Amino acid sequence: MSFEVNNPTTFGIGGSFNWLVGGAVGGAIGSLLFGVVLWLVDPAIITEAVPAIYGLETAGTAGWLFHLAHGLVLGSVFGFLVTRDPIFGTLMADVETGFLAAMGPGLRLTLAGFVYGLAVWALLPMIVLPIWAAVGAGETAFPGLAFESLVGHLLYGLLLGALFALVAKLESDVKAAEAPFEEADESR
Image 1 (spheres, rainbow, N blue to C red):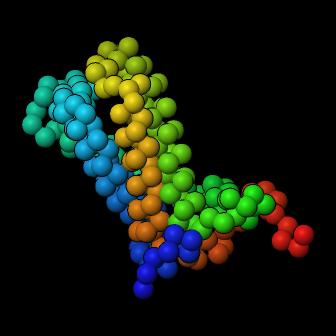
Image 2: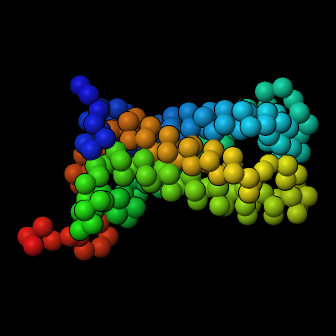
């Protein structure tokens, strides 16, 4: 049995909580990759800046644990959002654009992860962290606007989406998905 990006997942975790498992696995592993990117650029981002968000001093592996926990939670949120009817139906809809029409569910979920990573980068380090620091809850030592933060979040999202497509069994969901808009007419 092999996995093809253009075919829906026919194996993996099924059931009503497949979104949670797929999102948590993709999020944890994606945040590990993101953490490695940050570690290679400046290890202090993980060891000092991440714990400082919570007002903690540098404490061994606390930064890594917080970073992985963030990824796990955000991955679970991705899994929840992407499997809701309006979003999932939109992702799986038949479209007239040749580029999008040629994409299978796995690639569409991977690209949805990419967009999610971009949204997380735009929201959390760019907006939420400065507000968090302004109310005195922590410091903004995390380089939100830095190029490595953007790259890390995009890599996180790509890996999250790809692993979600691999881990969550979605074959029946893909077949039953209904777009919240009028789909392309195949009779033309």
